[in-house]
Length: 84
Image 1 (cartoon, rainbow, N blue to C red):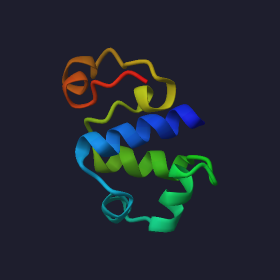
Image 2 (cartoon, rainbow, N blue to C red):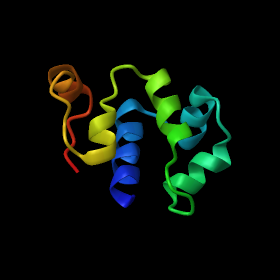
Image 3 (tube, rainbow, N blue to C red):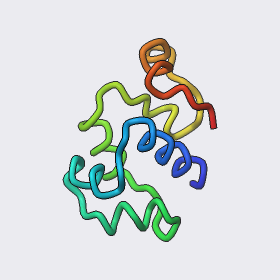
Image 4 (cartoon, helix red, strand yellow):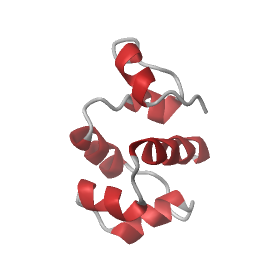
């Protein structure tokens, strides 16, 4: 789970999001997102669904597993080039 949170933090930094801005964009409570980022709560399906709806260019496979999706590989590698 720590790897998912690390990749989520890298995505937030790359896109210029703070916990407040991302939680507002996703329509979720800021404390919920902060608890996930701090390791108190685990990332859940609701967060992943909201991320998918928010950013259709996000490679969710990479976010979850660390392995790139072949269909999104070229466009996403420009936006999310960090391998963690």
